[in-house]
Length: 437
Length: 174
Image (tube, rainbow over all chains, first blue to last red; front, side, top):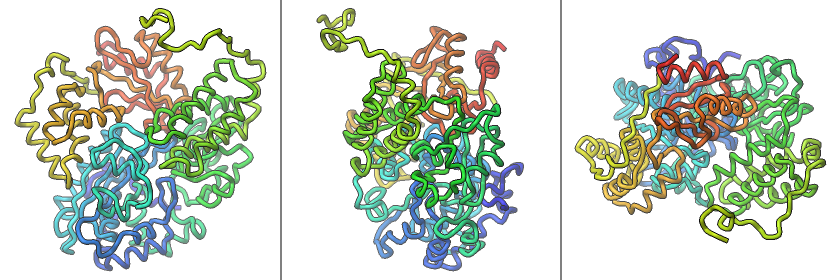
């Protein structure tokens, strides 16, 4: 397949506007402005493009939730808060082709009637924020952004907004809270952002990769887009592959490529000639899949049928030397750190999982621990929390416990019970802490 | 590429902190981008941290006054986001990614190597104020695992020898 999203890769100076124009840049925007907002939305609906950020919600349908005749401002927010462990595809697009993202933003803003757009980029991506800012300045100067774009009467201001280190701000309502200058606490839904979003106004939040798909959908048509993949799972997809493979990196492939092809053909197989043990198909928040699931197709529906999710397309590959208890503990640590703390099941649950898993690793596992972990995960998932972070830590941990019980048993069986003390030792009654007993 | 060192303002220097004209103008420019003044808070904090290296209690108070918020609100935001520093940092902050892909590709060995070389672990600073190690969560560069972010710059595909070369480059003693 010819590259669409990463067609600029390998080209020298691909970030400049001139280079982008040579590749046919901003032609999609020109066409969009000439056919009108409704035709653009229809084309995107027909393309069956699904959100590339992780949830896989149909993009065109998301746009239609925005009230058409709403008086006052509407916003389009580009979600560049790429923080899902194992995911680094948006960074690649911004690095090689920032104008492609801007063109997508302009098309989406035009379709939903937004005249201000914010790119929410994670705080660590200083370099990529600067690339985007330079591209915006260049596009403004040449009238691809700003007032009266390409003489159409459509105005659009785009601003880069840097986050400051919070995984949770990738969740769209937490992102909006953060954009409003607050802590990134997810909001209860409904109302959905399309009705009450940024600053109380209708807002569409789309991922970088989703937006980068738009110019080619407009230029080549929905029929071309649906010719890649299969119904409900269409278009090119970026897979970021990391872990124990020979050639980790970002690969643009037709959606629905099997994981076997991704890992063994494109990434050159497992490092050091070892055997594959397991892989996360779509970032660390997706349930883990075992080596026997290699022939699952990497699209939304096939991953769901296999009991996992495509998520962001971040494939983390683990070889046979990896101990799944350590994996679970590492992830529990991540989610315990990143839980915003609003909902008890997530705030406490991730911490409890971390404590239990650390205890198992220290050699003090108990036979009931796997069951306790599963119980905590049940308690925190399935809509028990405001946002999906509760599920995000429960699903991978319960899948690790469920699919690799032998790793847990091996750790637990010879484990010595914790030495029991006569009194519970609380931090403030420990000798030498200055608080006395 | 060489990483610019952080020149952090001392605790004493920020005790009588006031906005100067340049900052005032920059903040006014930020406020214009949003429909509410509050939305300019995080960009303003970035501006201040870039200039002073960290966010002191006095800076929090002045920022709150400038944007019409309470100091408690501003402190709440500062402490929620892990990238805002509430104490003066070292000149080079080594942010070692410890999440899954980096962990299975050698982040633990990198931390051990840093401990051997610098005598410090995560959360610690060298006595000369040159280096500080922070264990961080996923940096979104898993394809280049293991990754360390030094100040604003990413260094990928590291191992002990590349790390030594990097430290040599930063200290100017290769």
